[in-house]
Amino acid sequence: MKRVKRRYLLLKVEAERMPDEREFLDSVWGAVGKLYGEVGSSLTGLALIEYDAEKNLTIVRTELAALGMVRAALASITSVAGEAAAVHVTAVSGTIKSLHER
Amino acid sequence: MKKTFADLHLRANLKNRESAKRLITKAAELGYSMVAVPLSPEARQEELAWLRATCKEAGVDFVSRVDLRPRSQNEVLRLLRKIRRRFEIVCVSCESKEVARQAAKDRRVDLLSFPALDWRQRFFDRAEAELASGGLAELEVDVKPILALEGRVRVRLLSCLRREVAVAREFHIPIVLSSGAGEMILLRMPREMAALAGLFGLAEAVAAVSRVPADLVRRNRLKLGSGFVAPGIRVVREGSDC
Image (cartoon, rainbow over all chains, first blue to last red):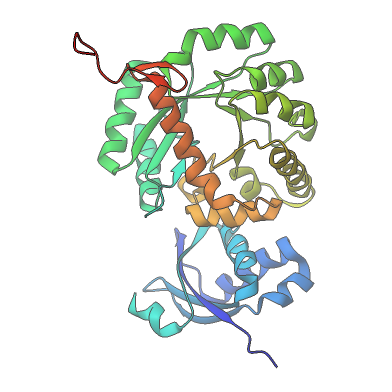
């Protein structure tokens, strides 16, 4: 079987109050689900790798083929846990190590 | 070479200078190196000077832009005669078919914009595109409604935009992707804007936030420069030895 290519995205969350991990994840899945539905969401292979609210450091993983979908879904987030928020992708990499080096 | 990203529709509220300054600074932080704030035709020189200074302080290139909301064909012509040489970008908000057609064929118009909420007022069809292909007008698409709307209304908007993008591609009309944001929370990075444009099938989305708006500004600055004579002709040197 062909190996699945993945990408790791370094995110920056902008909100008045930093959401907790569960709230953040709910809003990401909510945005992906709203834009692409359940079948589309299942193709993204989205997973939360790291979430540090204090350092505002978030890393998510996605399949390379769904990178555009995930970027659009993350950009479409306007609120997290009922509060205005924005999620910016600051870097994309093939390994977690290189993301940490940035 | 590093790309120049431009947001030609940053809706800063000039009545609140602090928030306008924060919005421009945020745009610079997100990676834009060229921004335009829409002004009314009655904009004062003092407002332009303040914007220019604020953008310089934030490290972005300021582009003067005027948004026209004419109600008739004659008003389009009258307003264009009055303001064309005062602003680098002229955008016409087309709220009727008559205005849309006139704006599309007039070579003094740079951007055509259509209301996002009422799909019946989006007049960018094949006839409009054919007229625009003979002029210089480009289609402006704002990302803000995609972020602000939800459900059925957003579905309708995305479907309209998909159709317009296909028509624009057929007639070689360039598309400019702008934020249309008036609040910092609705500003997105250039590549995020491009990703959102993928939702309505804009394949050349990165160019729509970089090369296309930058070329438009460059072309108009050349035209407004003192040496411009006609398209393709400009004064290079003056004097008795020429």
